Amino acid sequence: MRRIHIALAVADIDESIDDYSKRLGCNPVAIVREKYAMWRTDQMNFSINQIPEKAGQLRHLGFEDDHASGFTAEDDINGIMWELFSPTGQDEKIREIYGEPEAG
Image (cartoon, rainbow, N blue to C red):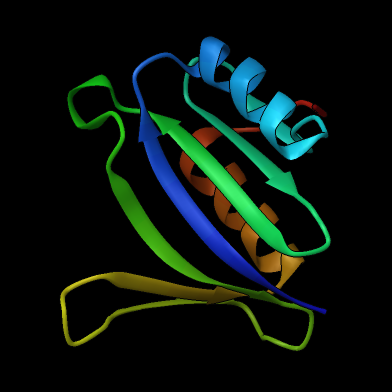
């Protein structure tokens, strides 16, 4: 399966988890308290990071692809970072950057 990935910066992670869970109709599949949350739906992989000074800004885009190997990132012609990763590759990157997530 291939899902679009959207990553945003938010002011308050807990308030944002509540808001986006209602909007997406599901709970996050991974949460790192005070830092990060990620949802997987049939259509998208959506993540948020608590970065108050950049709240509301796009962090990057990409694709979660079951057939991707590992994790890659590159900027497009407009300077927007695009990531490509497998679910396992993203899970490893989350642990590397933020620590061990809890289930949502």
